[in-house]
Length: 72
Image (cartoon, rainbow, N blue to C red; front, side, top):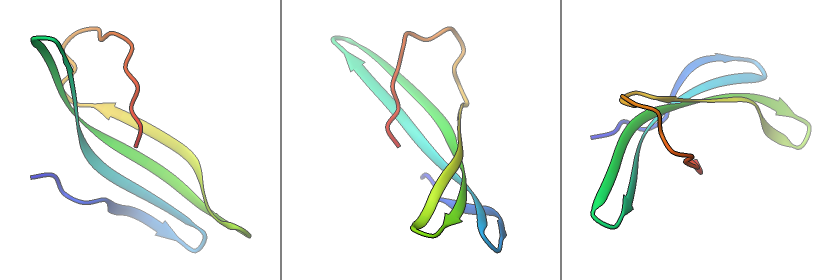
């Protein structure tokens, strides 16, 4: 079971989040399953929170992958 987003660090106007995810892609009879972690560094702005940095770590990518797109 995947855990929800977790705050790794928090200061007055900045927050760093860690969010685990699963990526599944099916094409015909083949399937790719990858687990990963999204890390977001958020900063407070006058209009709300903004993403300063976003990192994606794929945890079990054992080989070079075709171009994939992750929408998180």
